[in-house]
Length: 170
Image (tube, rainbow, N blue to C red; front, side):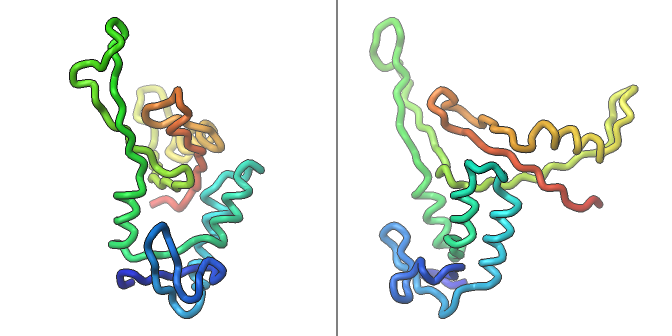
């Protein structure tokens, strides 16, 4: 796909023939993409938890998904990621610690993260679990769990809802 062009699953997102994201304008393809609609449907059904608390996002991803070029998307990945400066305060003096300036980066709350989860037969002496049993145990622990990844746990950042999809084996 060329730069400054987009494909949308829902023409209602457009103003005329243009998609506006922040201060940018993208020329949309003439018709909405059935393939992109199918991707949105699949993500809604498979990538998000089935709890009622995620119903809004399941519906939103079905209709509000858009496809940009790698270059255009890279801009948002680089510039729309929240970066906050912080200063470590010395408890004794109440002033900034020497070298205490640091930054935190946070993904937008609606981000979908994907990771491969692979298992093999257990290798510990006396443990005869097969790869499928190991995967089932991990899935039992992770499925639907609310995980905290990264720092800033006290501010509620880094909370991730886990969903495990089981694919084929090789």
